[in-house]
Image 1: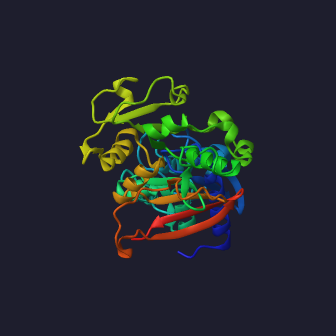
Image 2 (image 1 turned 120 degrees about the horizontal axis):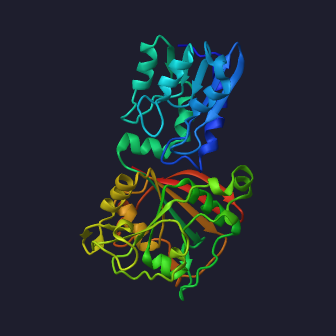
Image 3 (image 1 turned 60 degrees about the vertical axis):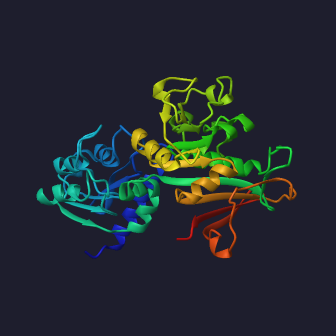
Amino acid sequence: MTFTTQDHLMMQKAILLAKQGIYTTAPNPNVGCVLVKNGKIIGEGAHLKAGEPHAEVHALRQAGKEAQGATAYVTLEPCSHYGRTPPCAEGLIKAGVKKVICAMVDPNPQVAGRGLAMLDEAGIETASGLLEADARALNPHFLTRMETGKPFVQLKMAASLDGKTALKNGVSQWITSKEARQDVQRYRAQSGAILSTAKTVIDDDASLNVRWSDLPPSIQESYQQASIRQPMRFILDRQHSLTSDLKLFQASDEVVTISSQNTHPIGTSENHMQCRVDDGQLDLKEVVNKISRDFNVNHIWVEAGATLAASMINDNLVDELIIYLAPKLMGADGRSIINLIGLETMSEAIDLDIKDIRMVGKDIRITATIAR
């Protein structure tokens, strides 16, 4: 099918609408919908929160009876199954739309072309593939999990220009600027889970939650505080060293401890994950898989020290690295950013593909992937 200039403009509008859910919809995908009739927009909507109406429902409600004979532009194939809400494909059929153009087919096994098939069977003209690359960029975490069965894992690290995360005596606050720390809050707010270690929590007395006051002003201006979803927090604690007086446990948001035991001194069995030990350390592959599978998480944001960072990379668990470099020199005896040890030849060095470099305040933020 050849798409018209109007088709492109309307899908661009739907993609902009979908972006409204970046900090609120997980684990559901971000989706936007625009209904057009006689060259005019008669309804539009975005999916804003899991369990609440999907983008198509908002657009159909706005259009009312005018939806009959309209064209629907949707960033993701309309769903075909009953979940917490009825199938959107069914809603479009009942409304009497004449055409549905979606940017991409939904890779979710519960949909995977069945939504378009339902529409076709009802006599509605369908097409897909319009601005697909832009639509895919809306949902990298959802798509990774649907297409690979694994969550999207981002590893965050911060260091001085000479690669140090703390002075020799352990002092580390603050290496990076306020703007960089706000940027970290933005990434936390997009994630479904934050993974860290008991050592990191204890050393920094870290809460690891999304702090509204520290979010960038652009987010505060666009969202209500109550609408920002808090990610679950998962803490590796093989030695059971966490104590209930830590700031981590003062927030009401859920904390799940992880160890090789079936219980933890803090909390209940529902707030504890048991994982096997491999070579004296918790099996990180099992940890990541259990977080994704048992807690329906698409996106894991990892904040940890040099040892866990190295283990995550060595176990091939990292999809993307977010590295902040501050304009400071902290000395050769400072603590290193990552404990990769035993490398003896340059062929053993881990190559990175740098995807983006930009200034965040006074700091440099590098986005990279492991070269495969």
